[in-house]
Image 1 (cartoon, rainbow, N blue to C red):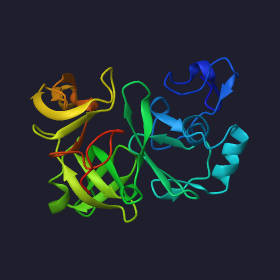
Image 2: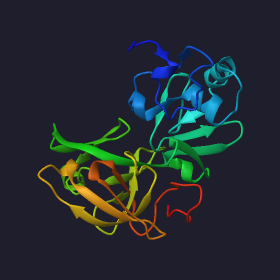
Image 3: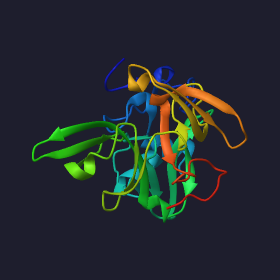
Length: 247
C-alpha cells in the first residue's frame, strides 16, 4: 500500500465513500489515530456531515480555519479524526463527538457547546519520567505528566475526563466491576452498559469482560475493546438516544 496515496477499495469498509465512483480517496495524515480507526477531516466534512458537496469545497472550508478538532483549528484536510474526538463547526456553533457505532464503526453524535469542552481519554500506557513524575499516555496521542502521588492512582485502561481548553483532568473512571463500559472495537462495537464480569488472564489486555445493556442484553468482549465511560451513567454523550451526561 502506498504511503502517500490510497485507493478507494483499500480504504476501511466503514468509510462512507463509494468504491467505484473514483480511483483515489483522501489518505489520513500521520497523527493521533491509525488509518483503520480514523477518518480524514475532509471526508468527515463532505461525506458524513455533508457541509460541502465536493472535496475542493471541503478543502476550502478547512483551509479557512472554520473547523476545530479538540479545541484547535485544523487546516489539514487529511487530519485523522478518531475515537472521542470533538469536532466543532465555528460558523454554526455546532459540535460533534466521534463515538463507536454498531454499523458505521465510528460516527459523529451531536453535543452541546458546554460538553464540547470535555473529552474522555483512555490510559494506554504509564511510565516513570525524570523528576519522579508519572507520564500517562492517552489513546489520542497526548501525554500528561503528573507528580508521583497523583499519577500513581491512575491505572492502564482507566479513563480520564479531560478539559481540552486547559488540558487538565476533570474526572477519573476506573475500569472495574460496576462501571459503565463502552465497546469500541470488535463485532460488538457500539454497545455499552454496566460491567458485570471481568475474567483476568495472565495478560491484562486479553482478559474477557461482560457488560449488561440498559435493555438487559449481555455482551462479551475482551477488556482491550472496553472503554470506561462513567460510574453510574456516562460522563459524556456516547449515543443519539441516552440520558443526560454528568459533567
